[in-house]
Length: 177
Image (cartoon, rainbow, N blue to C red; front, side, top):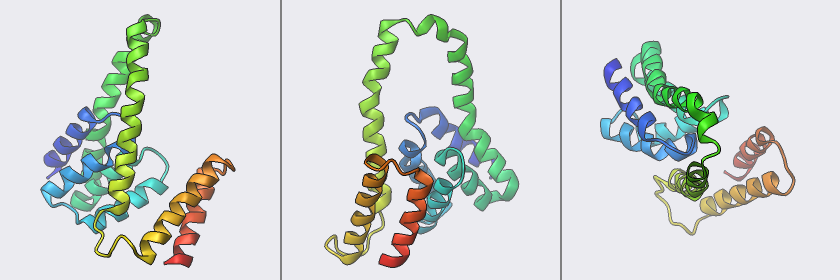
C-alpha cells in the first residue's frame, strides 16, 4: 500500500502544473480509480486541506495517505507529491541566472498563464458542483453561488485576507444551509 501511495502521488507530482488547486481534479481521478476514498470523503479532505497551511495538493496527498495507511502512508504520499517539484526546482535554480534573460523562456511562461488559470477554474467548477443530486435550480445552488460571489467580491474589491474570507464563508454556510 505504501508503494502504491508513493507511485500515485509521484505521478501526480510529475504531471502537475499550475499549483495545488489545478491538481485537485487529477488527484480525485487517481484516488477514485483506486477506490481509496468516496467522493464525499474526498470533498471533506480537500476542504480540510484547503484550511491547513501549505499547498492544498500536498495537504490532500498527506490526508489521503494517512486515511489509507496511517502515518507511513501520509509520509509516502507526501514524499511522492513533492519529490518531482523539489528536483525540478533544484535543477531550474542551478540554471536560472542563465535562463531568466532568454526571451523564449520568458514568453513561454507568459503563455502558460492562461492554461493555469483555466485549470484552476475547471477545478473550482468540478469540485464545487460534483456529486450533485439535486436540480441546478435550487436554494442550495443559489446559496452556493451567493457565497462564491461574496468571496470574490471580498477578496477583489475589499481586499479581505483569505483567512477572513474562509471564516466568513463558514459562517455563511452555517446560516444558509
